[in-house]
Length: 330
Image 1 (cartoon, rainbow, N blue to C red):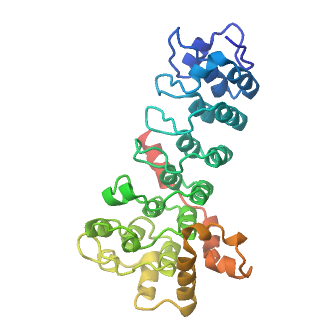
Image 2: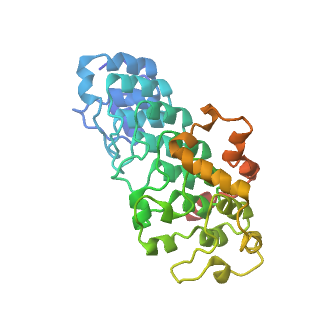
């Protein structure tokens, strides 16, 4: 067994891994896994170069069936990630929950490691074995930097299976449910559609009504009118009906900031300036929207096309409803 720099004296690799919730049999050599978990990049580089350890490079250990790369993400050392990828580690190998290394890095808010994995070719959608995606978990947790990075690398803000089954949800609606305007803002900037009827594939009308954005705003984010204002500016339908066939103005009582804004906006057409913005963004397409700053456009035009007048709302301190739910369950 090769020497591991971070291994405490008089402790075997198997025993140490057991203390870290990793179950290994005596015949399993978990030295590679140990170095990855401990963030021991020097030891890992030495081990990965030995032919004997190549058979363990993608070996998954119990109880979570985690391969070395997945453990390296938990260890948090970017150098370990790079060593394993250079050695040929399978970047898409999941754990028992169907979580890829990118999914874990996203859920742990490790932006630098996310960048390494995405630039190495990690699928921004994660694994189909896991109904949740890296983008959805980033939105749920209010990780706006992660949302932006995933969109830049091609994550789909309207994932087909999640949209058509409503399970586990639609990223744009999740941003509202958890009152994360910064994530909502990044999704809109990245080209997320406010109206599912604009998708290139047909969506069951019942799904469209069930995922009504204005109803979600008045139910979950009624104290934050900026959600409604940006929804309107990006071409949202304020008269969208829900499954009961009623608009949100009919269903929800007056008195909330979002409802008051909805009433003031109802019946008013978008300004010519706003319509021009939507037209230009549509012509540019989603890929070019993510690279606006590098396009040959007047510098004064880029903030306008990016809805930057709404960026001030991202600085507002909002309660993370997901964290509150978790706290109540403890």
